[in-house]
Image (tube, rainbow, N blue to C red):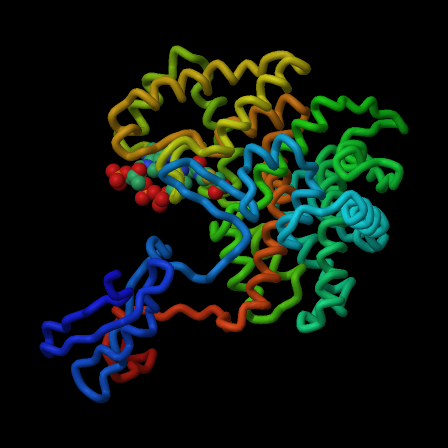
Length: 427
Ligand code: CMC
Protein backbone atom coordinates (compact mmCIF):
# COMPACT_ATOMS: atom_id res chain seq x y z
CA UNK A 1 0.00 0.00 0.00
CA UNK A 2 1.72 3.25 -1.10
CA UNK A 3 1.85 6.17 1.33
CA UNK A 4 -1.22 8.42 1.19
CA UNK A 5 0.98 11.47 0.84
CA UNK A 6 2.17 13.88 -1.80
CA UNK A 7 5.82 14.88 -2.04
CA UNK A 8 6.33 18.40 -3.34
CA UNK A 9 9.71 19.68 -4.43
CA UNK A 10 10.04 23.46 -4.49
CA UNK A 11 12.50 24.17 -7.30
CA UNK A 12 13.02 27.70 -6.00
CA UNK A 13 14.67 26.42 -2.86
CA UNK A 14 15.35 22.75 -3.57
CA UNK A 15 13.38 21.84 -0.43
CA UNK A 16 10.93 18.92 -0.30
CA UNK A 17 7.66 18.72 1.59
CA UNK A 18 5.34 15.84 2.27
CA UNK A 19 1.65 16.57 2.66
CA UNK A 20 -1.09 14.06 3.52
CA UNK A 21 -3.71 13.03 0.95
CA UNK A 22 -7.14 12.42 2.50
CA UNK A 23 -10.17 11.47 0.40
CA UNK A 24 -8.32 12.37 -2.78
CA UNK A 25 -7.52 15.88 -1.58
CA UNK A 26 -4.64 17.80 -0.10
CA UNK A 27 -5.30 20.66 2.29
CA UNK A 28 -4.63 24.02 0.68
CA UNK A 29 -3.29 25.28 4.05
CA UNK A 30 -0.61 22.56 4.00
CA UNK A 31 0.92 24.53 1.12
CA UNK A 32 1.53 27.50 3.40
CA UNK A 33 4.65 25.86 4.90
CA UNK A 34 6.25 26.14 1.43
CA UNK A 35 8.23 29.38 1.61
CA UNK A 36 11.27 30.92 0.01
CA UNK A 37 12.13 32.92 3.13
CA UNK A 38 10.95 33.25 6.73
CA UNK A 39 8.84 36.34 5.99
CA UNK A 40 7.27 34.78 2.87
CA UNK A 41 3.48 34.35 3.32
CA UNK A 42 3.69 30.80 1.95
CA UNK A 43 2.30 29.12 -1.14
CA UNK A 44 -1.40 29.44 -1.97
CA UNK A 45 -3.50 27.64 -4.55
CA UNK A 46 -5.17 29.80 -7.20
CA UNK A 47 -8.57 28.51 -8.31
CA UNK A 48 -10.90 31.08 -9.85
CA UNK A 49 -14.53 29.83 -9.90
CA UNK A 50 -13.52 26.88 -7.65
CA UNK A 51 -12.87 24.59 -10.61
CA UNK A 52 -10.87 22.17 -8.51
CA UNK A 53 -11.42 23.12 -4.89
CA UNK A 54 -13.56 21.21 -2.40
CA UNK A 55 -14.97 23.79 0.01
CA UNK A 56 -16.51 21.35 2.47
CA UNK A 57 -17.09 17.74 3.41
CA UNK A 58 -20.71 16.86 2.79
CA UNK A 59 -22.89 13.80 3.38
CA UNK A 60 -25.95 15.09 1.54
CA UNK A 61 -25.66 14.65 -2.23
CA UNK A 62 -23.33 12.55 -4.35
CA UNK A 63 -22.70 13.32 -8.02
CA UNK A 64 -20.52 11.41 -10.47
CA UNK A 65 -20.54 13.78 -13.42
CA UNK A 66 -18.78 11.41 -15.84
CA UNK A 67 -21.20 8.59 -15.25
CA UNK A 68 -24.32 10.75 -14.87
CA UNK A 69 -25.03 9.63 -11.29
CA UNK A 70 -26.95 11.67 -8.72
CA UNK A 71 -27.87 10.38 -5.25
CA UNK A 72 -29.57 12.02 -2.26
CA UNK A 73 -28.17 10.61 0.98
CA UNK A 74 -27.11 7.53 -1.02
CA UNK A 75 -30.44 6.92 -2.75
CA UNK A 76 -30.36 7.10 -6.58
CA UNK A 77 -32.35 10.07 -7.87
CA UNK A 78 -34.33 7.75 -10.18
CA UNK A 79 -35.67 5.84 -7.16
CA UNK A 80 -36.37 8.94 -5.07
CA UNK A 81 -38.25 10.55 -7.98
CA UNK A 82 -40.28 7.41 -8.57
CA UNK A 83 -41.26 6.60 -5.00
CA UNK A 84 -40.97 9.67 -2.76
CA UNK A 85 -43.07 12.74 -2.22
CA UNK A 86 -41.50 16.21 -2.07
CA UNK A 87 -41.79 16.61 1.72
CA UNK A 88 -40.48 13.06 2.14
CA UNK A 89 -37.46 14.03 0.00
CA UNK A 90 -37.02 17.21 2.06
CA UNK A 91 -37.05 15.10 5.24
CA UNK A 92 -34.43 12.77 3.75
CA UNK A 93 -32.15 15.68 2.85
CA UNK A 94 -32.61 17.44 6.19
CA UNK A 95 -32.56 14.47 8.56
CA UNK A 96 -30.30 12.11 6.62
CA UNK A 97 -32.73 9.19 6.61
CA UNK A 98 -36.07 8.37 4.99
CA UNK A 99 -38.95 9.00 7.42
CA UNK A 100 -41.14 6.23 8.80
CA UNK A 101 -44.87 6.61 8.10
CA UNK A 102 -45.34 8.27 11.52
CA UNK A 103 -42.38 10.60 11.10
CA UNK A 104 -43.61 11.67 7.68
CA UNK A 105 -47.14 12.32 8.95
CA UNK A 106 -45.76 14.41 11.84
CA UNK A 107 -43.46 16.37 9.49
CA UNK A 108 -46.30 17.07 7.03
CA UNK A 109 -48.52 18.22 9.87
CA UNK A 110 -45.80 20.48 11.24
CA UNK A 111 -45.31 22.12 7.84
CA UNK A 112 -49.08 22.45 7.37
CA UNK A 113 -49.44 24.44 10.59
CA UNK A 114 -46.91 27.07 9.44
CA UNK A 115 -48.17 27.86 5.93
CA UNK A 116 -49.70 31.24 6.78
CA UNK A 117 -47.68 34.43 6.56
CA UNK A 118 -48.11 37.65 8.54
CA UNK A 119 -50.65 39.89 6.81
CA UNK A 120 -47.99 42.61 6.54
CA UNK A 121 -46.27 40.37 4.00
CA UNK A 122 -49.32 40.91 1.80
CA UNK A 123 -48.92 44.68 2.24
CA UNK A 124 -45.32 44.83 1.15
CA UNK A 125 -45.96 42.44 -1.75
CA UNK A 126 -48.38 45.07 -2.99
CA UNK A 127 -45.54 47.57 -3.11
CA UNK A 128 -43.87 45.73 -6.00
CA UNK A 129 -44.57 47.02 -9.50
CA UNK A 130 -47.09 44.96 -11.48
CA UNK A 131 -44.30 43.83 -13.85
CA UNK A 132 -41.66 43.13 -11.18
CA UNK A 133 -39.64 40.02 -11.99
CA UNK A 134 -40.85 37.12 -9.81
CA UNK A 135 -37.31 36.23 -8.72
CA UNK A 136 -36.65 39.81 -7.59
CA UNK A 137 -39.85 39.67 -5.54
CA UNK A 138 -38.95 36.25 -4.15
CA UNK A 139 -35.50 37.19 -2.93
CA UNK A 140 -36.86 40.38 -1.36
CA UNK A 141 -39.81 38.65 0.30
CA UNK A 142 -37.84 35.70 1.69
CA UNK A 143 -35.12 38.06 2.97
CA UNK A 144 -37.81 40.20 4.60
CA UNK A 145 -39.11 37.19 6.56
CA UNK A 146 -36.05 37.64 8.77
CA UNK A 147 -37.65 40.87 10.05
CA UNK A 148 -40.81 38.97 11.02
CA UNK A 149 -38.84 36.30 12.87
CA UNK A 150 -35.97 38.00 14.71
CA UNK A 151 -35.64 34.81 16.81
CA UNK A 152 -34.11 33.28 13.66
CA UNK A 153 -30.85 34.97 14.65
CA UNK A 154 -30.42 32.27 17.33
CA UNK A 155 -28.63 30.04 14.90
CA UNK A 156 -26.74 28.27 17.69
CA UNK A 157 -30.00 26.95 19.14
CA UNK A 158 -31.03 23.67 17.42
CA UNK A 159 -34.71 24.20 18.36
CA UNK A 160 -34.74 27.65 16.80
CA UNK A 161 -33.02 26.32 13.67
CA UNK A 162 -35.63 23.60 13.42
CA UNK A 163 -38.45 26.12 13.69
CA UNK A 164 -36.99 28.37 10.97
CA UNK A 165 -36.54 25.37 8.70
CA UNK A 166 -40.25 24.51 9.08
CA UNK A 167 -41.22 28.15 8.57
CA UNK A 168 -39.16 28.41 5.40
CA UNK A 169 -40.50 25.20 3.86
CA UNK A 170 -44.09 26.00 4.88
CA UNK A 171 -44.23 29.69 3.90
CA UNK A 172 -42.18 29.54 0.70
CA UNK A 173 -45.05 28.13 -1.44
CA UNK A 174 -47.43 30.74 0.02
CA UNK A 175 -45.09 33.58 -0.93
CA UNK A 176 -44.31 32.01 -4.32
CA UNK A 177 -48.05 31.79 -5.03
CA UNK A 178 -48.62 35.41 -3.92
CA UNK A 179 -45.92 36.44 -6.42
CA UNK A 180 -47.66 34.52 -9.20
CA UNK A 181 -50.98 36.23 -8.41
CA UNK A 182 -49.37 39.65 -8.02
CA UNK A 183 -47.93 39.42 -11.55
CA UNK A 184 -51.39 38.68 -12.89
CA UNK A 185 -53.26 41.23 -10.80
CA UNK A 186 -55.23 38.49 -9.06
CA UNK A 187 -56.22 38.53 -5.38
CA UNK A 188 -54.05 36.35 -3.17
CA UNK A 189 -55.38 32.93 -2.23
CA UNK A 190 -54.51 31.80 1.29
CA UNK A 191 -53.28 28.33 2.23
CA UNK A 192 -55.78 25.52 2.62
CA UNK A 193 -54.67 23.11 5.24
CA UNK A 194 -56.91 20.30 3.96
CA UNK A 195 -54.64 20.03 0.90
CA UNK A 196 -51.22 18.46 0.67
CA UNK A 197 -48.07 20.51 0.03
CA UNK A 198 -48.18 20.40 -3.77
CA UNK A 199 -52.00 20.54 -3.98
CA UNK A 200 -52.05 23.58 -1.74
CA UNK A 201 -49.41 25.38 -3.80
CA UNK A 202 -51.18 24.65 -7.08
CA UNK A 203 -54.47 25.77 -5.58
CA UNK A 204 -52.96 29.03 -4.31
CA UNK A 205 -51.63 29.77 -7.81
CA UNK A 206 -54.52 28.69 -10.05
CA UNK A 207 -57.74 28.94 -7.99
CA UNK A 208 -60.22 31.44 -9.39
CA UNK A 209 -63.49 32.29 -7.68
CA UNK A 210 -63.13 29.47 -5.18
CA UNK A 211 -62.68 26.93 -7.96
CA UNK A 212 -59.79 24.83 -9.14
CA UNK A 213 -60.05 21.34 -10.57
CA UNK A 214 -56.81 19.59 -9.54
CA UNK A 215 -55.17 17.37 -12.15
CA UNK A 216 -53.34 14.60 -10.25
CA UNK A 217 -51.04 13.80 -13.20
CA UNK A 218 -49.86 17.41 -13.47
CA UNK A 219 -49.50 17.72 -9.69
CA UNK A 220 -47.35 14.60 -9.51
CA UNK A 221 -45.31 15.87 -12.47
CA UNK A 222 -44.68 19.15 -10.64
CA UNK A 223 -43.77 17.21 -7.50
CA UNK A 224 -41.24 15.12 -9.44
CA UNK A 225 -39.69 18.26 -10.93
CA UNK A 226 -39.31 19.75 -7.45
CA UNK A 227 -37.73 16.50 -6.21
CA UNK A 228 -35.25 16.54 -9.10
CA UNK A 229 -34.21 20.06 -8.12
CA UNK A 230 -34.09 19.46 -4.35
CA UNK A 231 -30.30 19.41 -3.99
CA UNK A 232 -27.26 19.42 -6.21
CA UNK A 233 -24.28 19.68 -3.83
CA UNK A 234 -22.01 22.73 -4.13
CA UNK A 235 -23.65 24.61 -7.01
CA UNK A 236 -23.55 28.40 -7.28
CA UNK A 237 -26.65 29.10 -5.15
CA UNK A 238 -25.81 26.53 -2.48
CA UNK A 239 -22.33 27.96 -2.28
CA UNK A 240 -23.97 31.38 -1.82
CA UNK A 241 -26.18 30.06 1.01
CA UNK A 242 -23.18 28.46 2.72
CA UNK A 243 -20.94 31.48 2.14
CA UNK A 244 -23.46 34.04 3.40
CA UNK A 245 -24.62 31.70 6.19
CA UNK A 246 -21.00 31.34 7.34
CA UNK A 247 -21.22 34.91 8.66
CA UNK A 248 -23.87 33.49 11.08
CA UNK A 249 -26.67 35.57 9.61
CA UNK A 250 -30.22 34.17 9.99
CA UNK A 251 -31.36 31.47 7.52
CA UNK A 252 -33.93 33.71 5.76
CA UNK A 253 -31.14 36.07 4.72
CA UNK A 254 -28.85 33.20 3.75
CA UNK A 255 -31.58 31.57 1.63
CA UNK A 256 -32.36 34.88 -0.05
CA UNK A 257 -28.68 35.01 -1.12
CA UNK A 258 -29.21 31.58 -2.66
CA UNK A 259 -32.27 32.87 -4.52
CA UNK A 260 -30.23 35.78 -5.88
CA UNK A 261 -27.58 33.37 -7.18
CA UNK A 262 -30.21 31.09 -8.71
CA UNK A 263 -31.76 34.05 -10.54
CA UNK A 264 -28.78 34.30 -12.96
CA UNK A 265 -29.14 32.88 -16.50
CA UNK A 266 -26.12 30.61 -16.11
CA UNK A 267 -27.80 28.92 -13.14
CA UNK A 268 -31.55 28.55 -12.44
CA UNK A 269 -32.42 31.41 -14.79
CA UNK A 270 -31.41 29.07 -17.64
CA UNK A 271 -34.89 27.48 -17.71
CA UNK A 272 -36.34 30.90 -18.53
CA UNK A 273 -33.52 31.57 -21.03
CA UNK A 274 -34.23 28.27 -22.81
CA UNK A 275 -37.82 29.32 -23.54
CA UNK A 276 -36.68 32.72 -24.78
CA UNK A 277 -34.13 30.98 -27.00
CA UNK A 278 -36.80 28.64 -28.42
CA UNK A 279 -38.99 31.68 -29.13
CA UNK A 280 -36.09 33.38 -30.86
CA UNK A 281 -35.40 30.31 -33.03
CA UNK A 282 -39.09 30.25 -33.95
CA UNK A 283 -39.24 27.06 -36.03
CA UNK A 284 -37.41 23.81 -36.70
CA UNK A 285 -35.99 25.05 -40.04
CA UNK A 286 -34.03 27.73 -38.18
CA UNK A 287 -32.30 25.27 -35.82
CA UNK A 288 -29.18 24.55 -37.98
CA UNK A 289 -28.53 28.28 -38.45
CA UNK A 290 -28.89 28.88 -34.71
CA UNK A 291 -26.45 26.06 -33.92
CA UNK A 292 -23.93 27.57 -36.36
CA UNK A 293 -24.24 30.95 -34.59
CA UNK A 294 -23.58 29.32 -31.21
CA UNK A 295 -20.54 27.51 -32.60
CA UNK A 296 -19.28 30.80 -34.00
CA UNK A 297 -19.33 32.17 -30.45
CA UNK A 298 -22.57 34.17 -30.68
CA UNK A 299 -24.40 33.15 -27.54
CA UNK A 300 -24.76 29.78 -25.88
CA UNK A 301 -27.14 26.92 -26.31
CA UNK A 302 -29.09 27.51 -23.11
CA UNK A 303 -30.01 24.38 -21.16
CA UNK A 304 -26.85 22.67 -22.42
CA UNK A 305 -23.61 22.01 -20.61
CA UNK A 306 -22.78 21.64 -16.96
CA UNK A 307 -19.78 22.24 -14.75
CA UNK A 308 -20.00 18.76 -13.26
CA UNK A 309 -21.92 16.54 -15.70
CA UNK A 310 -19.82 15.52 -18.65
CA UNK A 311 -22.49 13.08 -19.77
CA UNK A 312 -26.29 13.27 -19.95
CA UNK A 313 -27.67 15.00 -16.82
CA UNK A 314 -29.67 12.21 -15.09
CA UNK A 315 -32.31 14.77 -14.14
CA UNK A 316 -32.81 15.74 -17.78
CA UNK A 317 -33.46 12.07 -18.63
CA UNK A 318 -36.16 11.86 -15.97
CA UNK A 319 -37.63 15.20 -16.98
CA UNK A 320 -38.09 13.95 -20.54
CA UNK A 321 -40.22 11.11 -19.19
CA UNK A 322 -42.26 13.58 -17.11
CA UNK A 323 -42.72 15.71 -20.24
CA UNK A 324 -44.36 12.81 -22.07
CA UNK A 325 -46.90 12.37 -19.26
CA UNK A 326 -47.59 16.11 -19.04
CA UNK A 327 -48.03 16.62 -22.77
CA UNK A 328 -50.49 13.70 -22.86
CA UNK A 329 -52.67 15.83 -20.56
CA UNK A 330 -52.04 19.29 -21.95
CA UNK A 331 -51.36 18.60 -25.62
CA UNK A 332 -47.90 19.05 -27.16
CA UNK A 333 -46.01 22.23 -26.48
CA UNK A 334 -45.24 23.45 -30.01
CA UNK A 335 -41.72 24.42 -28.94
CA UNK A 336 -40.94 20.81 -28.04
CA UNK A 337 -40.28 20.07 -31.70
CA UNK A 338 -37.61 22.81 -31.81
CA UNK A 339 -36.05 21.56 -28.56
CA UNK A 340 -35.88 17.95 -29.81
CA UNK A 341 -34.26 19.08 -33.06
CA UNK A 342 -31.72 21.20 -31.14
CA UNK A 343 -30.87 18.23 -28.99
CA UNK A 344 -30.64 15.87 -31.96
CA UNK A 345 -28.23 18.11 -33.87
CA UNK A 346 -26.18 19.08 -30.83
CA UNK A 347 -25.66 15.48 -29.76
CA UNK A 348 -24.20 14.66 -33.18
CA UNK A 349 -22.17 17.84 -33.66
CA UNK A 350 -18.43 17.70 -33.06
CA UNK A 351 -18.44 21.08 -31.24
CA UNK A 352 -20.86 19.86 -28.56
CA UNK A 353 -19.61 16.26 -28.48
CA UNK A 354 -15.95 17.24 -28.00
CA UNK A 355 -16.88 19.63 -25.18
CA UNK A 356 -19.17 17.04 -23.61
CA UNK A 357 -22.16 19.38 -23.72
CA UNK A 358 -25.42 17.55 -23.04
CA UNK A 359 -28.92 18.77 -22.11
CA UNK A 360 -29.10 19.74 -18.45
CA UNK A 361 -32.02 19.95 -16.01
CA UNK A 362 -33.16 23.27 -17.42
CA UNK A 363 -33.49 22.21 -21.06
CA UNK A 364 -36.91 20.57 -20.86
CA UNK A 365 -38.27 21.80 -17.50
CA UNK A 366 -39.41 25.17 -18.90
CA UNK A 367 -41.48 23.48 -21.61
CA UNK A 368 -43.28 21.50 -18.92
CA UNK A 369 -43.84 24.52 -16.66
CA UNK A 370 -45.24 26.42 -19.63
CA UNK A 371 -47.61 23.57 -20.49
CA UNK A 372 -48.79 23.62 -16.87
CA UNK A 373 -49.70 27.31 -17.22
CA UNK A 374 -46.74 29.02 -15.53
CA UNK A 375 -45.35 32.11 -17.31
CA UNK A 376 -41.72 32.09 -18.46
CA UNK A 377 -40.41 34.54 -15.88
CA UNK A 378 -41.88 32.36 -13.11
CA UNK A 379 -39.94 29.17 -13.93
CA UNK A 380 -36.98 29.96 -11.71
CA UNK A 381 -39.31 30.49 -8.73
CA UNK A 382 -40.37 26.86 -9.19
CA UNK A 383 -36.69 25.83 -9.29
CA UNK A 384 -36.16 27.76 -6.03
CA UNK A 385 -39.12 26.04 -4.38
CA UNK A 386 -37.57 22.71 -5.29
CA UNK A 387 -34.03 23.67 -4.18
CA UNK A 388 -35.11 25.04 -0.79
CA UNK A 389 -34.68 21.81 1.25
CA UNK A 390 -31.19 21.39 -0.21
CA UNK A 391 -30.19 24.93 0.73
CA UNK A 392 -31.40 24.44 4.29
CA UNK A 393 -29.78 21.02 4.65
CA UNK A 394 -26.46 22.43 3.39
CA UNK A 395 -26.73 25.46 5.69
CA UNK A 396 -27.32 23.18 8.70
CA UNK A 397 -24.46 20.92 7.71
CA UNK A 398 -22.16 23.92 7.38
CA UNK A 399 -23.11 25.23 10.84
CA UNK A 400 -22.53 21.83 12.43
CA UNK A 401 -19.14 21.31 10.79
CA UNK A 402 -16.37 22.18 13.29
CA UNK A 403 -13.95 22.79 10.41
CA UNK A 404 -16.05 25.56 8.86
CA UNK A 405 -15.42 29.23 9.59
CA UNK A 406 -16.53 32.44 7.95
CA UNK A 407 -15.95 31.97 4.21
CA UNK A 408 -13.18 34.26 3.17
CA UNK A 409 -11.11 33.42 0.10
CA UNK A 410 -7.65 34.80 -0.56
CA UNK A 411 -6.73 36.82 -3.64
CA UNK A 412 -3.68 37.39 -5.79
CA UNK A 413 -3.24 41.16 -5.78
CA UNK A 414 -2.37 42.45 -9.26
CA UNK A 415 -3.00 46.19 -8.76
CA UNK A 416 -0.45 49.03 -8.50
CA UNK A 417 2.31 48.89 -5.91
CA UNK A 418 2.30 51.62 -3.21
CA UNK A 419 2.21 55.12 -4.70
CA UNK A 420 1.85 58.67 -3.40
CA UNK A 421 -1.72 60.08 -3.25
CA UNK A 422 -2.25 62.81 -5.86
CA UNK A 423 -4.41 65.76 -4.66
CA UNK A 424 -7.34 66.49 -7.00
CA UNK A 425 -5.92 69.80 -8.33
CA UNK A 426 -2.79 68.02 -9.56
CA UNK A 427 -4.55 65.14 -11.42
N1 CMC B 1 -23.43 26.42 -25.50
C1 CMC B 1 -22.31 26.53 -26.28
N2 CMC B 1 -21.08 26.34 -25.82
C2 CMC B 1 -20.94 26.03 -24.52
C3 CMC B 1 -22.04 25.89 -23.66
C4 CMC B 1 -23.32 26.09 -24.20
N3 CMC B 1 -24.42 25.96 -23.43
N4 CMC B 1 -21.61 25.58 -22.42
C5 CMC B 1 -20.28 25.54 -22.50
N5 CMC B 1 -19.87 25.80 -23.77
C6 CMC B 1 -18.49 25.77 -24.27
C7 CMC B 1 -17.72 26.99 -23.83
O1 CMC B 1 -17.82 28.04 -24.77
C8 CMC B 1 -16.33 26.44 -23.71
O2 CMC B 1 -15.81 26.31 -25.02
P1 CMC B 1 -14.24 26.61 -25.30
O3 CMC B 1 -13.50 25.56 -24.52
O4 CMC B 1 -14.08 26.53 -26.76
O5 CMC B 1 -13.99 27.99 -24.75
C9 CMC B 1 -16.54 25.01 -23.21
O6 CMC B 1 -17.85 24.64 -23.66
C10 CMC B 1 -16.48 24.89 -21.68
O7 CMC B 1 -17.42 25.83 -21.12
P2 CMC B 1 -17.22 26.59 -19.75
O8 CMC B 1 -17.94 27.88 -19.84
O9 CMC B 1 -15.76 26.60 -19.40
O10 CMC B 1 -17.95 25.60 -18.77
P3 CMC B 1 -18.43 25.93 -17.29
O11 CMC B 1 -18.31 24.66 -16.53
O12 CMC B 1 -17.74 27.12 -16.74
O13 CMC B 1 -19.95 26.34 -17.50
C11 CMC B 1 -22.30 26.29 -17.64
C12 CMC B 1 -21.03 25.52 -17.19
C13 CMC B 1 -23.52 25.47 -17.18
C14 CMC B 1 -22.34 27.66 -16.97
C15 CMC B 1 -22.28 26.40 -19.18
O14 CMC B 1 -22.28 25.13 -19.78
C16 CMC B 1 -23.43 27.26 -19.73
O15 CMC B 1 -23.32 28.46 -19.78
N6 CMC B 1 -24.58 26.60 -20.12
C17 CMC B 1 -25.74 27.36 -20.54
C18 CMC B 1 -26.52 27.84 -19.33
C19 CMC B 1 -27.24 26.71 -18.62
O16 CMC B 1 -27.90 25.88 -19.26
N7 CMC B 1 -27.16 26.70 -17.29
C20 CMC B 1 -27.85 25.71 -16.46
C21 CMC B 1 -26.88 24.81 -15.78
S1 CMC B 1 -27.64 23.36 -15.04
C22 CMC B 1 -28.75 23.86 -13.85
C23 CMC B 1 -28.37 25.00 -12.99
O17 CMC B 1 -27.27 25.06 -12.44
O18 CMC B 1 -29.21 25.87 -12.83
